[in-house]
Length: 173
Image (tube, rainbow, N blue to C red):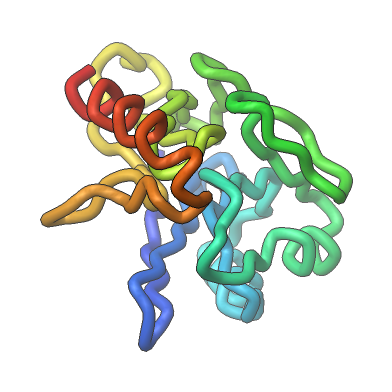
């Protein structure tokens, strides 16, 4: 396996997205793509991988997703969004549940429901496909940052207390 793991930072805001895959198998996924999707198309071409999955960790209240644009540009990709937390989506998609696993060559991605920032939020554990019980990384979307946790108040005061409690338990587990 030759791991492909690229971090894409959007200048001016605290937004990270990722290209993850296996170039020996020629497959990859993109997580939380920004609207300027050329960066993913170019990276996929440079690393000789086909993006087959586009994952959203949650519904973004503070930025615009590039998932639909990226899906339209790539013939082989589908959009995957959370089934958890009661979210609804106005576009074609596949749903992801807590515990679902996806394999990209020798890389395994396992979805974990991590509510708190939003009710539907998912994080993704990263592991070698033959050792899924020992992850080497996690993509947390906006639920966890280097020095803080994602805000639970973006959906309004009616949801803040419940989301803060869920976030506390998510971080402890």
